[in-house]
Image 1 (cartoon, rainbow, N blue to C red):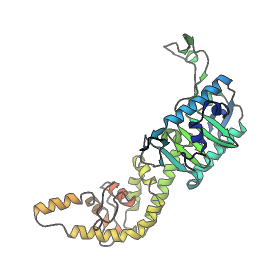
Image 2: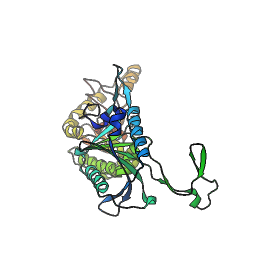
Image 3: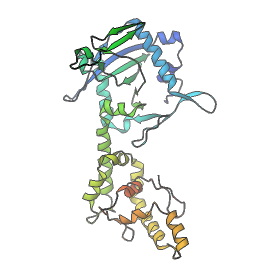
Image 4: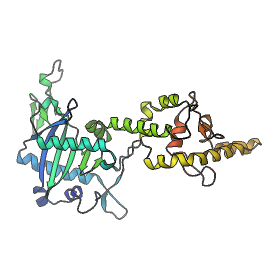
Amino acid sequence: MSLNDKGNLVNKISNMNEEELNKLDLKVYLVSKARETDNLYNAKKEQLKPVLRDWLRNRLKKELESLKFENENNNKKFYVSDYNHELVKTDYIAKLDLNDDKLLRSKKNKLIQAILISENIEDKEVKFQVIETSIDDESIYFIYYRGVKASAVAKKNAKIMPAIRERDHLIVQEKDIIEFGGKIELIISKDYLYVIKPTTLHYTFDYTDHIFDKRNKNLETITSMKFFDDYSNINFFMEKSNIYILSKSWAGISEETLDILEESFDERCIELREIKEKIPDDKENKEIYQKKYESLWPLYDHIDVNNKKVRFNNEKSVTPLLHFFSDKIVESFLTKGYRAG
């Protein structure tokens, strides 16, 4: 069920009138990390005054409305696309299917389990908040990465006396406070995560670890293919591929792309060899030809097109191979044209 389906609870909340909103069951939990345990999270249920609960319901509806954009028919809808390790689309909500990531699904389940247990934790340990909304035994969880704001009065070397504005008065902040509301950053709906703010995904579920795991798995799969051998300089290839800035790109290679990579490699080598053999002799046409295939030339530094093997050159950038393996250069080099992604 997509976010825009009438039966989807997220969509229902965004379209609720005041009477329906008042009936929406809403609970707030403060959550801390418990990395040293198998539970991963500790949580406690926050007791809210009715006026604050009503305010949160209305705030939640407004924030969901703000995530919608008008389509060509002037109807407002959520724009959702699959999560991409490399790209952040500010005008889209990114969707992660937890059925494709057992480790992430396990962490999500442990977060929900911590909420169900709901024990007492110190306010200073709180890292983020979870708002649970429910209708007819169906629950949606909204995550805000907002901890407890410690009182600066208690801090050493505080140069400015902190204050909170309440109506027309300024009150000195003598105690720690909890701020609610704000922008929705992450939504949990059954076995799907809807990501509005990628950093919150990373902080909440330590998702950087998942990126590294996926990167390593993809690199291991690629280097086990037939076009790598004892002369492919695999150690150098892995060393350059493992740098942090390239991790998301390697992690973002889909299983579908990897499935066809090995069987298509020979064909690509034949095309690369043909392209190189057909370089024109005259200067003018040669320059035009080289310009046409400019994104392909760096591949010859790393691929033996005659023997159809990788021969990684440690003195050159690994990026051309990354584009090649991730299908950023798409379609046939010769017959269908290509583009560098």
